[in-house]
Amino acid sequence: MQPSDVKALLEARIEGCDFHIQGEGCNFQVTAVGEVFSDLSPVKRQQLIYSALSDEIASGALHAVSIKTYTPSQWQNAAGRA
Image 1 (tube, rainbow, N blue to C red):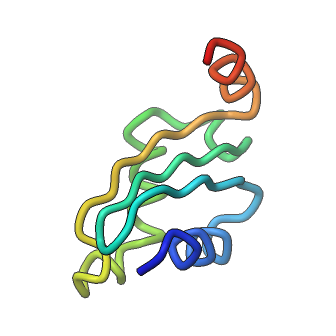
Image 2: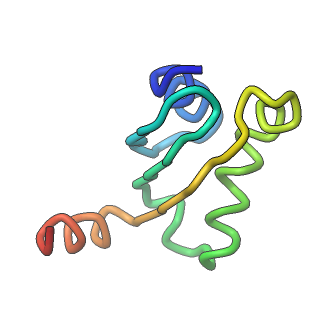
């Protein structure tokens, strides 16, 4: 899989988020930014992303996925410190 493949899958399955994907093969780093995360605990945020990719993880197309999630305001704060 390519990063663009992972991004397309996530965009089709989770509305209202911006996704930034890095990696190659079956190992990817997913950064997701969206209001959908504002009322979710860190664990629920991770579960939302993993559930959107569950078929690909189960099939082995995706092996390792690291996830960072932000609300838009958290993302702005994080980008401001970078």
